[in-house]
Structures are given as C-alpha cells and as structure tokens.
Image (cartoon, rainbow, N blue to C red):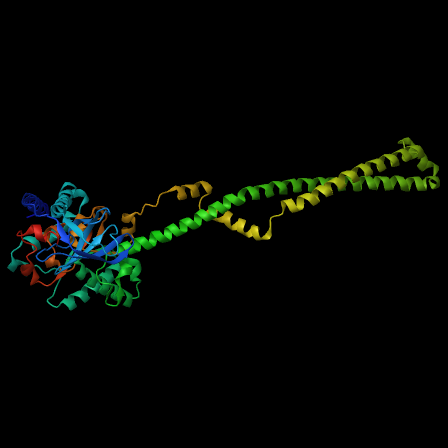
Length: 484
C-alpha cells in the first residue's frame, strides 16, 4: 500500500466516524459545576473544570465554553483529564473562579479538520512530503510480527525502540541536540501534554549542558501543564509566552519610536527657524566682511592723499608736473580727500548697522547646548529608519502578530499530534526532521499528517510493546483515538 492509498483510507475512516458521531448526537453538552483559573499566559488562560463522573473527553478535543453568567462564550481545547478534573486551555478569560460553565465538545469538527488536512496532502502531493510518508506506511500497515523486523537506522528513517523509557528519552534528547547544532528545524510530537513537557524539559537540559541557549531555539506550542521539568522552567518555552513577550517588547519599542517621532516633529520647526536665522547671520557676516574690506581700501586711499598733500611743497618740479598730467594737484587732492572721507563715513554707518544686526542674530541662531545633542541623535535615528515617511508607515501599521514567521524562527517546536493535524498554522510551516516521541501511542492519521510536513528525516521512538497494546495504528475506535 502506498502513502496516498493509506491516507485516502484514513480519510474515509475519519469521515465515517464523523458521520456516526453526528447521527448519534455524541457531541452533547457537559456541565461543569466548578471551574477555577490555574494560570494565564499572554492571551491564553488555563482552567481546571470539574466534570460529572463518567464523562471522558480526549486530549486536544476542541470545545466551546459557555459561562452561566452574562459573559460571552469562548473557545477552548482539552489538555488533560484526570478523573473528574479537566484542564482546558481557553482563548478568553472567564474570570478567576467562574461559578459554573457548560462545555460543548466538537469531536465531529475535530475529525473533519483532520480529514481535510489529509485530503489536502493528497490533493497537493507535489507540495507535500509524501516520499517520507511512504517510509512510515510499513509500520502502519504491517502485521505485529512483521513490525518487529522493521528497525531502521537510515538517514531518512530512524527508529529508537527500547523498553527502557529513560534510555530512549536520553538518546532522543542527544539526537535532538545534534540536529539543532546542524541547524535543522525539528517538529517534536508526543501523544499527550505530559509526555511533551517531559521531552521538552529533558531536551532543554541536554542543550544547556552542551552550551546551547535552549530558550532561543525551543518552543512548546501549547501551554505547558507542568511548570518545571528536569530543572527547566517550561513557562518560558511556551509559544504563547514567547509571542506575548516578543510583541510586548515590540509595542514598547513602537511606543519609544512614537515618542521620538513626536519629539522630532516638535523640534523640527524650531530647528528650521534656527537654520534660517543662521543663514541670515552668515549673509550679514559676509556683508560685514565686504564692508570692512572696502573701508580699509578707502582708508588706505585717504591716507595716501593726506601724505601726498603734506609732502607736496617738498616735491620736485618734475614730480609736480607728472602729477598734474594725471589730474592730481592740491585742489583735486583736497577734493579726493573730502570724497574719501565721505565714503568712509558711509561705510562706517553701514558697518555699524551690520554689527548691530549680527548682535541680534547671534542669539537667535544659536541652538541651546542641551538641545543640540538631542537634535543630532533624533536626526540620526530618523535617518537610519528611512526618514519620517517610513516612520509614519511603521507607526500606522497595526499590531498583527505573525505566528507563522515567529514559529519558523524556532529550531524545535513541540506539539501534540492532533494540534499538528488540526491547527491551520502547521499546514503553512515545513520542518526538516520529525521526531515522533512515544510513536506507538500516536494515531496513524495524526502521524501521517505530521510526516507530510517534513522534508528530510523521520525519527520514531517508543516502546515496541505499545504497538500492539495501544492499538493506535489499527482501524478500530478511530473516533476516540483520532486525538492521539
């Protein structure tokens, strides 16, 4: 059987189970008499709801939460059930201690979403990694005895089968660390949230021991159930917490940018006025220099005329005749002296006016010392950001968290199989390696959906005895185990 044929088989089974659930009306409302807020991270809220005896809801089952008061309903997903205690991840807050809530599960919708994901894999086979999915097919279709002979250590498919849980977990953590060092993007799936928390904690501790900053590379897609695992604070690795922290910092930077921009706009007219006054000052100073130059030239001429008149009687006849030939005599020199003195008086008046104007413009053109450095820093910041037009565009842009771009920057993303198969985000993201932790306890449909997201390698780990014990790769009870 090929991967395409197996996928089509599971699509038919999931759609059949969906129809049976709809016909039987199994998605009935469940009343939770008690609910309390466990913790909130970013925009997600974790509630513990107490359900009546006999109620059993599968992991990652989507549901609607209707409060008994007048508040609006919200959407949520089941993370764990222990006895009558149900951990539900809600999108909106219901308050610290809502009196009672009604849970409306949507198993039919979950099966429909998973079936549609598999349909897309078949319809867009050229864009999916069906080649790698082919490697998983023998495990999902072979009889139990044949599976025991399928151990693989190839570069495409690797199996880490061991009855010792601690041994295989440590091997998996070391292998994940090596892949992260090799710059591979890893999708880690575990059958439930407790297993995912344990795996993530061990891998983070192994990375830390290897000198790697696990906080930068690991993201736990759902809210962690446990706060700490293997000495690691899992709350820091939650995808929602990382998103919230990143965009909170982004909003802070945006607010800082807005303050700088508004301050720049406030200083711009003031500085523009100073620039214009400086231009006026430069022009008046240039005029002053020209007036001083002309004044010195006229003064030199006047001094020369005065010297000539003082020495005229002592000049020889030849010198006098030479001067008279060019129109210089006592009478004309006296007229020149009066003319030069008149020019000096005029230039002195103009120079006094220029100096007065300079004295007025100097303080008007001066930029206060405390503003000069601020203005230079603001101008440099605006220039680096591409100018005021670019800044206006950045400030006008709405805060729209790009979850896809954010998750693509993580080296290891840990999630449960059903979230991978049903969340639209994962249909747009591709990985290099798939690590299926406790693979025998993961449903075949979810395992196939996850395998379609990887390009290079699949690693399956688990206890080989669970293949038959869990029965997740057989066709019976798919409606219940689709969430595994």
